[in-house]
Every structure is written in structure tokens, then in C-alpha cells.
Length: 143
Image (tube, rainbow, N blue to C red; front, top):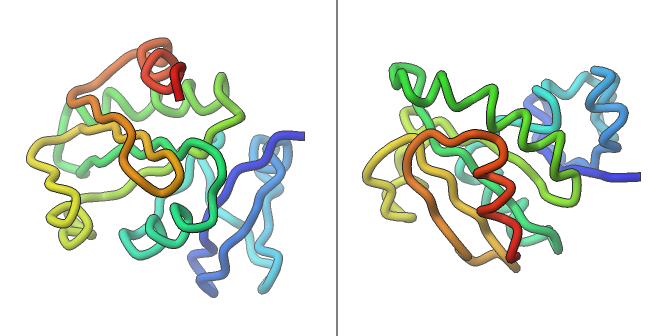
């Protein structure tokens, strides 16, 4: 069964989450037992949480860098979620650049939305702008 990774917003524990449980809104933290807030197979994480996941993941990590005030980011969100459902072999995360300026600066993010694919903890590809779900799939196709 496919799995994804996220960090519990309540206790900060790193969790491997069964994809079906996430889709059924039944994902719970393995440490504290509280619900994990996921949208499809996408979870929102902080910059620190992103770095933790990158260190542990042996699968592609696809990250949507966004902000709440960004119109194209809002349009892209549902497509990014759809892409997560079509690519269960990857981990899909969202990082709010307003709340996490340090990671944005560290990665040299100059515009949003920006999708970055990481491989073995390192940046593999990046694509600026909103995309359709199939474009995201093409982005990670050659991982």
C-alpha cells in the first residue's frame, strides 16, 4: 500500500501515513493519536518539517511553495492535490512562504507558486507558475 509522510501539527512527530487512511480522513499521529490534517495526499509543513522529511525520504518529494494572498496559488492548489492522487509513489507537501520565509530564502525562491521536486534530499527540478495535474506528473516523471 502506498504511503506518504507528514509531521503532526500537535506533537511534531514525523509520520509515515497509509495513503488510504489519508484519503479517508482517518490519518492519525502514531505518537499522540491526534488527527493529521491532509488534503488528498498533501500536507502543509513548515520549513523545518520539510528538511526533516527530505532527510528521511527515499521517494520523490514534491513541494508547492505558495502564499494565501496569491491568486495563482489558490488556483493551483486543487491541481496539486489531484496530482498527489495520481502519483502515490511521491510525497506531496505545501510550504506557505509567508509563514516560512527562512526556507524560502535558503532555497532562493523568488516567485510563487513554485513547485520543486527533491531527490535524495536535494533539489532535482523546479517549475514556476501554476500547472495542471498532468504537468506535475510530467515534472516528476523522470525522477
